[in-house]
Length: 306
Image (cartoon, rainbow, N blue to C red; front, side):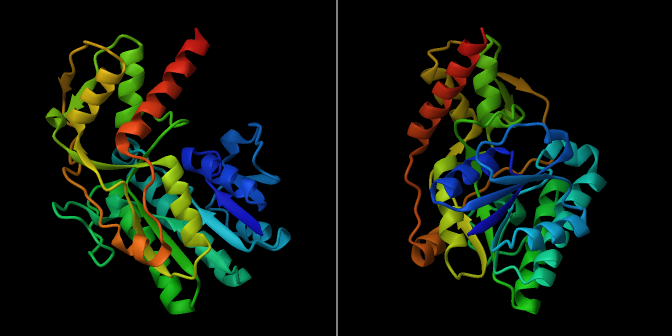
């Protein structure tokens, strides 16, 4: 099958493209212009451009006879979204609308749209797919909007659209240092004290990248339409995650409390029973094991750079 992956050079995009390639699919990667000179070993073809360029999207879908689209491209930095909400809304909301409209016009058989657990907003109980989408911050609201738009295209136009709502992704290859796990690992490896925001009391659920990819593939190759949660089942306080990383690295550095990041979601948990029931999916990597693998990858990367 010919598959288009937007956001193809991102953490998830590269892992997903590799898995698709191993399955024998033909991969067309859509990358932002800024990454146009990057070598892409997992892509059979790639195009440099922006998801806001509607004519280009239609041209790619037509030229390569795309049968499956994974729409992963998004502005995902909450700090960037807070500082520049318009850019985030344009990329996440209108970018998704452009992809879906192009797929509607070109009659693309199957589309998978990447939403997030952040689209639910603040909840203390485990969120099921029936929960209302109540994202409040600029990033969270943009994901709530794009999720709703994807559902609208499926409902109004009869499109085969699956929507992934994943917990926080982590694993080897994740180098976004503004996020908890890679940021903490790199600070400790540099001999710097790890940081705790809001006292480290935020409750988070994590999903190992290989399990996330399996979830995407299971949904893509099913006929299920609508949103599906994918999570790791385990939840942790941020300060306990930092403690686990310190222990794995045998570090005695003391975490430092820093100024709050603002209206950060304090608690998120996912109910993944739908994925288990409909797709036969469940996470295969425990958080302890996945974290150990991730730390080992970062340590090797840092040592190779020395």
